[in-house]
Image 1 (cartoon, helix red, strand yellow):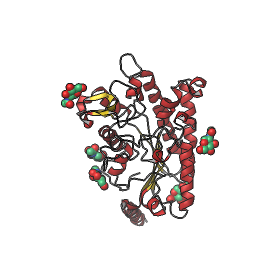
Image 2: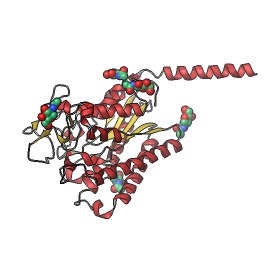
Image 3: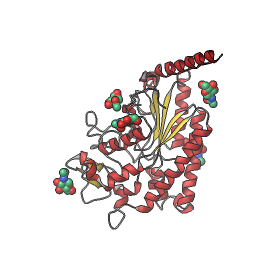
Image 4: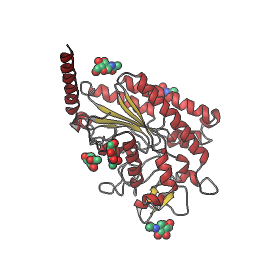
Length: 350
Ligand SMILES: *[C@@H]1O[C@H](CO)[C@@H](O)[C@H](O)[C@H]1NC(C)=O
Ligand SMILES: *[C@@H]1O[C@H](CO)[C@@H](O)[C@H](O)[C@H]1NC(C)=O
Ligand SMILES: *[C@@H]1O[C@H](CO)[C@@H](O)[C@H](O)[C@H]1NC(C)=O
Ligand SMILES: *[C@@H]1O[C@H](CO)[C@@H](O)[C@H](O)[C@H]1NC(C)=O
Ligand SMILES: CC(=O)N[C@H]1CO[C@H](CO)[C@@H](O)[C@@H]1O
């Protein structure tokens, strides 16, 4: 009896190992990405009325042929780098006209949109953008379109929240800024996000990572509002409070939703250290944008008449809001390491 049980245990163990090994083929694992300008790979370039677009030089200068591709950076996004390291294909923008059933089947879809927020009302000044609800609605459409095919293993990435502060709560033209205080606003965001993550689960999402916020009070756009040029500490505190509550939300969901691996990807401290001690990481400037109009600041975007810093690999920030390729790489590596996703290249990890 004892021996049979041992044999059975061995068989189960072998089955498990074999089961995992057979998933090693990264070719059929795809990603569905939901996010804002930090993850947009071109959607807003098709939203022709949007004021948040990376459609002009010098966006994309260090990516592919150097022409603008919709990414709000000189190079790769954090999600690009994380996916590459896991051996996953880069999902194309939802609005890319070449997107068809085969492309979706092989690569997944990226719904991220510059200006997008957890809240529908966020970034209304940009006129056009996909909010997180809208992105989930589009994903639902994709699923109906694909019908038989989705249901395979997929990674879901949700990277949202900074616009809900920078382009909503912190701007007095938005009603949310006078209807809420910091605490009640964060509660409103977390409650909304919970509904959205549960909705994604109900649509089949099991392996999901939510990226937390960075020290958004230190982006050049926020610094220029302080008399000293230092970080806006009150804004950073909002990010930390939001991260704390979303960490709890993700862990609560992971333990209550069957078969789910919901994780929180945090790089706040690492990013703050990069900003505080750039020289340690071989950076030279962590306060100003690499692409700017010189003394005329802030500008909404990097433009063809802006001038570029001498060495883009020495700057933390590319424009007033967004990090450079090099900074994104550092952030992505921290997240990969924390989540245990480093050097796995498409193997069995969650
Ligand atoms: C948010 O927008 C979606 C459509 O994108 C809509 O279905 C939903 O009802 C809206 N929610 C609120 C609270 O306005
Ligand atoms: C969880 O996984 C098991 C085994 O694969 C499956 O039978 C069950 O239906 C799953 N439950 C949910 C809610 O996905
Ligand atoms: C760092 O930047 C300063 C000006 O901001 C410049 O004078 C110096 O040469 C730069 N050093 C390196 C190593 O790039
Ligand atoms: C990757 O993870 C492994 C095991 O957790 C660790 O030993 C290794 O140092 C990590 N590599 C990098 C480049 O972070
Ligand atoms: C750590 C590691 O081996 N990463 C590699 C995973 O695969 C991508 C390309 O498929 C490489 O660029 C990474 O270096």
